[in-house]
Image (cartoon, rainbow, N blue to C red):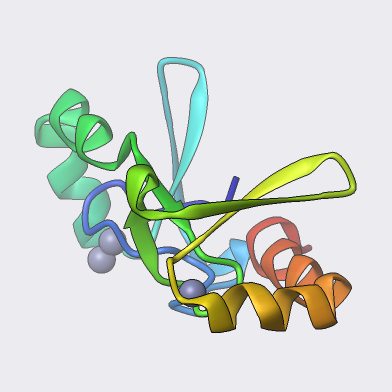
Length: 112
Ligand SMILES: [Zn+2]
Ligand SMILES: [Zn+2]
Ligand SMILES: [Zn+2]
């Protein structure tokens, strides 16, 4: 799943933040990526609250917009389910070149 900064709810891929530019923080054995130190500072004041706020958010692989999961449509590709914003254009674009969009998500969130 694409990483979202838990404090501001922005997808790190939309902010074009490569992994090394994000601020990472371990909380309950899980690593979270933050867009900036300020977001991490706010997160530390009430981690549960912020995690709860993003729990249902997913990122459209094409327009990179964060959406509550119930507002999205699903598409399965190579056994993985992707969630898209409702715009049919996004799903059409994805179907044309899925590798491009998948790679774009991975490069930024898991790239070295
Ligand atoms: Zn943030
Ligand atoms: Zn921030
Ligand atoms: Zn979209």
